[in-house]
Structures are given as C-alpha cells and as structure tokens.
Length: 251
Ligand code: PEP
Image (cartoon, rainbow, N blue to C red; front, side, top):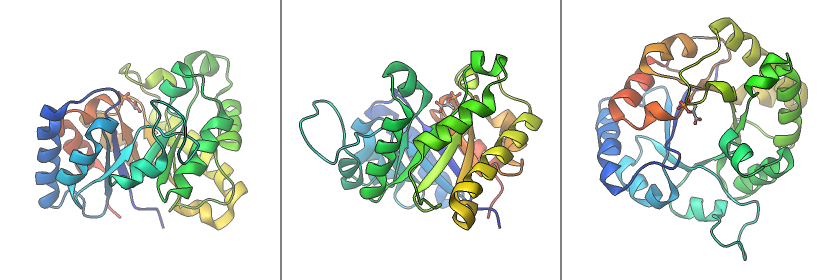
C-alpha cells in the first residue's frame, strides 16, 4: 500500500509576520477537508515557527528548514532539532541543495543532522538531487546512490524519514524533468531504500521537488513512487499551495 501522501512547503528565507495571512488561508482550507487522506507540512523561517504552529493547528504540521547536528551548545546562530520540537515542529528539512551549495554541507553532515532530528523526535526530510552538470554527464544515479548511502541514517522507517528527490537544476527555474524520468528515478530510489531497509522502506515517502506548480502537480503526483511534493516558490501563496494539495491523491 502506498504511504499517505505528504505535500510540503518550503518558504526558504521568505516570510514575515504579515504573511501569516497565507497560513490562515491554508488553515481555513483545511477546515474544509484539505488534509483528509494526505499530510500537509509548512516549513516557514524559524522566526515564524511558533506563530505558524498556532495558526495551522492540526490542519498542517510545521517544520524547520535545517538543524544543527548537536542537541545544544556553543553554536551561535544555529538551531537545534530539540528547539524546533520545543516550538511545535514535527519535521525538519535537512540537506536541501541550497544548504549543500551555500554552506558546503557534506553527506556526512546531513546524516548527522538527520540523526539529531530523529533523536529529538522529528521526521527528517532528507533532500537529494543532481546538478545540471551531473545530469549532463549522465551521473544522476551515481550521485543519488552516493547521497542516499551517505545522508541517510541506518535502520530508519517512514515514521522517521522522508526522502525528497529534488534535481538541483529544477529548483526555482521553471524547468522540470519529464514524467518518465521522475518515474524511473523514484523507482531507483525505492529500490535502493528496499535494499538497505527491507520492508521498512515501503513506508518511507519519496517526494518530488523542483518547480512544482498548480499546473503540473497532478501529473507528478500521479506517478508511481511519488508520495508527495516538496514545494518552494509556489508554497508562498496559499491559493497555489492549496491547489497543489488538492491535486494530490489521497490515502
Ligand atoms: C525547493 O526549494 O525545495 C523547491 C523545490 O523550490 P521550487 O518549488 O521553487 O522549485
């Protein structure tokens, strides 16, 4: 049985308190059944987590966009998974390509962050994906293999991790892979998860991310082994995000 779909919004470094109105609109849509048969997640900037949690209630979960691998300590400016949990987060994104690129995050560090998330009782949304140069060099599956092996902790199941396949060249560009490519790559990821985690891999959701919009969401979300979407730009506007949620199959 396919896992319950997850539609996740990543606000990145966008959003101020005035933008809570967008979350209120999502919460209102939730009261009309938006979250029936699917999970919804919003990852606002950390400054908005607490207020977002208060508005979204049980309509949508909130999550962090990153966490430190340690549970506390002298790490000025960083946020621990325990702190995210403390203000109501249920998920945290780790290894987003923007963090891998902007902050030189290695697979090893991403794995340590995922482990910190799990220790704190959060679900880690672990991002993987190839760059355009890697794709042009036909290295996509090699890159994904390396990232899966290096970024995922041992002995995980669907209650602890979500994998997000996000081709870097598709993020924020309006470019997307073909549905056939997404089908093949998600099947490849599923095989690798089953090889490593056995039956527990069946419950691990594999999200597609990269320029998902209301106009293309239904096509991506109908593909085998696509268990939801990680949405950047289109998650900032409630009407677009709600339309993407509505395009997802329900469990
Ligand atoms: C993302 O940042 O994870 C993402 C998929 O962005 P966008 O939807 O804007 O391409």
